[in-house]
Length: 472
Image (cartoon, rainbow, N blue to C red; front, side):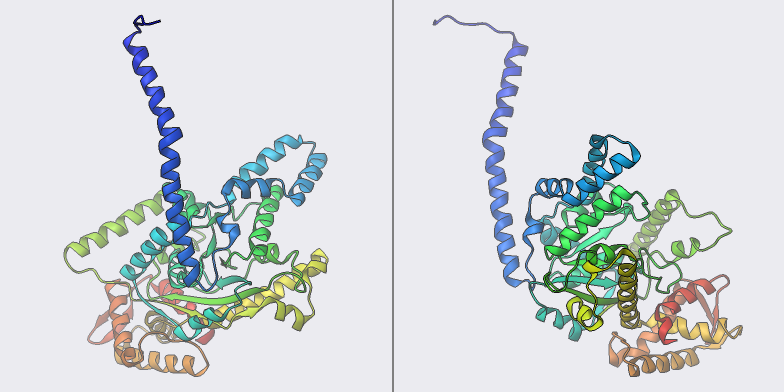
């Protein structure tokens, strides 16, 4: 029994390696997980004390539990059974697709990452690029919202910065969940975006099974009170004007909504505007029918060139922010009150009548959003240039006249209850700076105090002018 046993060196190191793995897995990892879980739980408790609407239990549920719940949802299983019989596809094959779709859609929300990483990044990036202005009076009304309601921000979509900007502005009051397109699947953004509560959507998918899984997830999240932000336009505006609303997301939220027994859904119209939209030229390229659409390589090349040019300007101490990014909140719209006023119960309507009712609500919301979009200096200057140079086909116009007319347009917008959020005392100075910014971008040129629109820049002038189309 006391004899020495000799083993090969390779076997010794193999046993040592296995022992190390067992030690890490059984002793070290549980301790590390416990440590981080304790910090996360403490952070969530602190957050819920200062948030106006607490992080919902649904968001804190383990992702695997949400996946199982979605995959085994009764409506999803009924749909799978029906499609299996109609298309003669084995039920197991369809269930595997459901699992894949659910895994793609369901986020892995992490409150610690959302507030310790995401909030910090969005705040730094937004303030680095823009001077941020928000309608404080309306923003304060978010404090008085019913804490048990489902809050849905309904926004216009001008830039991919919209996600970052609004998340940063409302982070002190609630945690938002976004639907993001397939662009966000790029590594390493994929994991970060999912951990911040966003869920991926195939926007142009016509697959009925996929749409059913997506519908059920949105319905679950809405019923559980998850605060959400939606872009009814379905994508970025190409010409600067608001696009016609797409009904998919609103229909998914309201398909089974009974205002008499379900929690209230509060829609908050949000208007966003920028002195400079980072994607403006790329968006306009997509409108040109006779030219090839920009591909992924063009987007990557343009992005790197943009970053390189800005780094070069920063090195020369010539870099400056891109002007104002302004956000305006309109009066909250209670879905319960809307249903009572219009005698609508979405859960009792036939498919055709439900779509008609959802379309009416969507148009009502988009009208509110359109009037909520704030005017910023560049849009005021572009709207005035559009009227004096492009529409009248003049070659040039005095700089002082454009500033004066832009001021008159601004006063008219304010008189008609529109919003101009940049500082009152410096409005004329800001309008002059907006002209300089357009000159710097070579969108317009100046000679002897006379302004001209540079060749082939009419589209860009109209793009910015169209953001306040309803006031022009």
